[in-house]
Picture 1: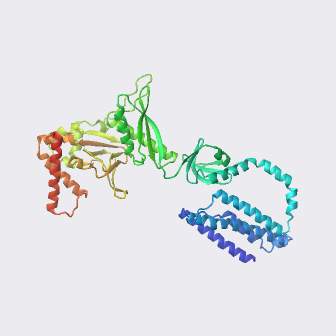
Picture 2: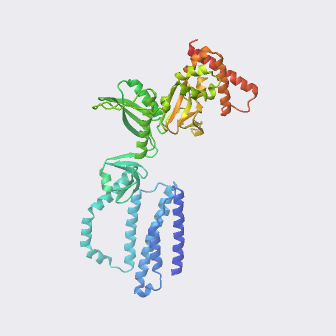
Picture 3: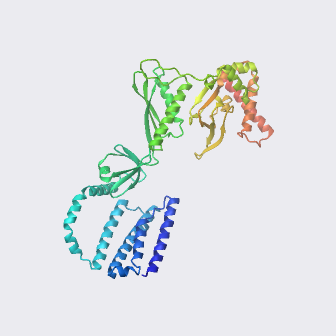
Length: 496
């Protein structure tokens, strides 16, 4: 084949490999093509056809042999990709292990190289005889590499893990990104470094493996005060972890009393999630511990100090911190609440002391769709996200709420479960108004039920919970139904 034809062939194959490489970047199903070896071999093949080389190299047979070898290696490399990797990636068949493909390719290349050299007139018998001593030296020096090769073979035949799995080998942990003849390559989750571990070491070690997409257990401990009854503590811990967005419900989270320490009761917690990197595991653990602190604060509990000399410095809050709000500030907040615009000053003064400020951590679920509730919340500081989960399990975010906005007001009117999930986007302080807080006001003013019902009904229409196209009679019917529900509800609370 002339130089021109070889050059054209090389350009076409290079373009094909480039396009395939770009497709690999766009689609993970398309296997990454071999580029370096085929292109270098083809360039060498083209170079052997250059006319001026015939003047430098006296034997034309030598150029032909070099060209044949270069073409052989390019063909083997591309053939393995086209005939083995692509059909396997497309699901047409199950390809053999990567390390077996590499070893088979090396053996086949060695056999064909010997055949080409023999046809070129190279005295192979003399070459093998004169290199016997060198072969022995190389074999002695290659004991460790041979161990790694056989270790790689055993890993591929037994397949204790595959590319993409997360494994732990001794103190090293990471995601398997490649398994070659000699080494196993892991990418760590903490710093993104690549660990290169000899296959012989991997084959002899105890391996912990986690498949991508399978639940991953995360265990940690937390210490709570002796004055906090264990049954209540376990209920609080399970309530917090079950509300975390990343914690799975199956397998279910667990909490137990682990030990009794000098200054606290130690509780063990186990949760399951699908994110298995070290950073995500520690991040979820940190978020849960943060949310446990906020949940304890809301009920007047705290993480106990360890026993030590001296007294711990008491926690002090700034004077303008919402958690320190007095009755006057609460009255001002309630005045801005759209549901309490019909309350007199005396009624606001009576309601305010019964309400309380509660604080939620970033990412913490305040109310969850489908759960029962008996209170509404008014935003004081922070931002929350309101969402719903449809019948297909898809999360739909509706809106974000900020200062002075309210949510959960239907809990004051009915015993129906919550129709939305509300999660804090940042640390948020809320004013909580429970159903029982309104009971004394309703006992004194029965007309307050109808006023509240009308305001709740109007608010539901404003936020789109009721069909705006309803007729006037339908709207009145919905409002009367809400009033009847509130009458029954508050009679039950009163014990009538």
